[in-house]
Length: 141
Image (cartoon, rainbow, N blue to C red):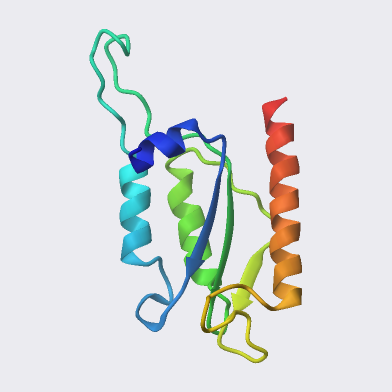
């Protein structure tokens, strides 16, 4: 199944970004490209769509953001992403914010598996996802 098809069937998007030195103020190129492709209108058969393009799979979907990085914990890239999502008419959950300082002790993930092992960070992620689920339910009313 193409990536766009999977997102077309979803009701929301949880987006996580990791910041590195080369892009400490923005998003990674891979993430920018994925959002670009998922925001493009699909151009199906004119008769099936009533003669016009169908919005891209991300358009109008609620979003939750989280990330990790250096001093600001990926905050700058999240703020940049929030600005980009405005143009897709994607409402973004305002809080709780999850910005993890991944390079500071104690370790946040298992180096061998990449699994999140830091209890405090896991609680922040759990709170974000619970708030996001509740917010999405309210938006559907």
